[in-house]
Image (cartoon, rainbow, N blue to C red; front, side, top):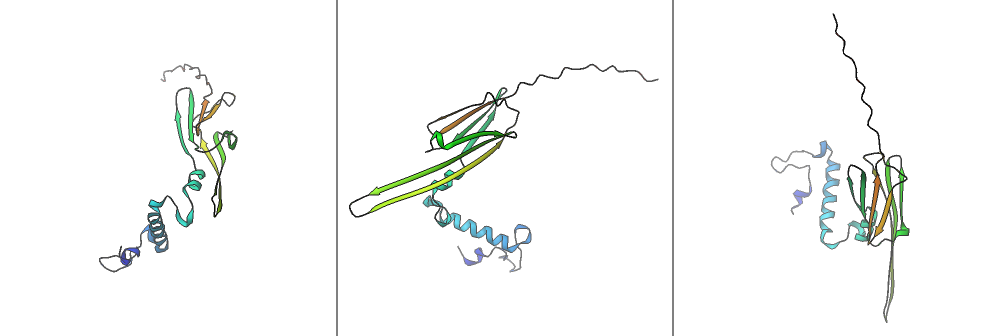
Amino acid sequence: MRIRELVPWRSRERGQLSPKNGGDPFLTLQSEMSRLFDSFFEGFNVGPFGTTGLMQSSAMPKVDVSETKDAVHVTAELPGMKEEDIQVTLSDGNLVIRGEKKAEKEEQEKNYYRVERSYGTFHRSIPLPAEVDDKKVDASFQNGVLNIVLPKLETSAPAGKKIPVRRLN
């Protein structure tokens, strides 16, 4: 990569100022620097400034939400977590999944002793597409996968009312 490509507000053809991102050259420079750092650390499973994949994955679990006629189904991937580290609540039409992941690796050899610890918490709030019956919600956790079934409230269809049409003279 040439140095001219690092300066995004310079036009290669005319040498005139032509900033991207709505005319803010500093915002353009920031996005280019972020892109460069991301591409540099891409193959190492390590993010910028030493954050490991473990901390990134614990920050935001992958969640699938689907809806059927009778229920809303939520599946969250929480690898390496235990059931007691997960909290699921319903609040104001949102499903809230919270958790804390703790990892400790201890290694002891003849000449050294090493302990690495990492902690990460996450909080995921999912707006529900329908009203659910909070008394019938079922959550299960197995092999690092959290499955939640939220049955919809049964709403009776409003009875139709016939409106007479009168003739105007």
